Image (cartoon, rainbow, N blue to C red; front, side, top):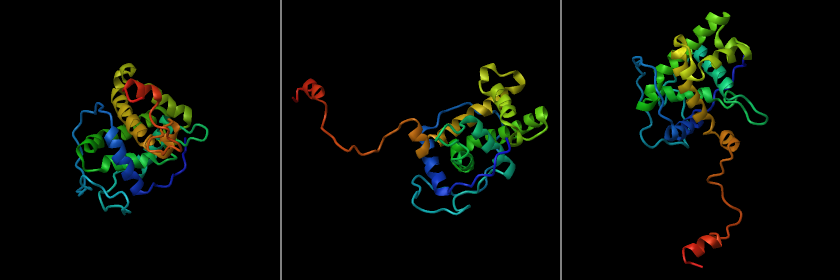
Length: 213
């Protein structure tokens, strides 16, 4: 796949995604392993200042190593690739959102930390086993071959079940990050919070039903 290194997204943007995606995050099974200890972090409490520019380490240290970030970016590219004018999840920096997510010192995010880190290690190991290269260095067909084997947990072979559980959760995080961006919302046609140019009031049939017309 040999993806170019992408620019890291602004942390303020990542925090906005975090707040939005957390509200809509689906409950998914997690890998049954002990959680790695989180670095000490104060967090932003219940009311983050989304108009403030945060420097790395102001709220919590990020987690991904360079290799983990490359693997996460490559997997985001496979899950939501570019389609026409709609950018891919990798192009939007969704892997940085996932890094921000698993680094946050809150219960839901802490539960995802170990499964994501173990899953990225698993997919690199599986890639090395099959093709002798890390996942980020595979071509599209090779990367898709691994993902096809773990994209539906009920059909995954026994030795691939761990990878399938990871893929399910990572895919949901990827989609949650992607569809919290302006590009993702535009892609699904979301028009909430958009002022109407003209408003002519409730439809006449509704007013008649309510006895108001």
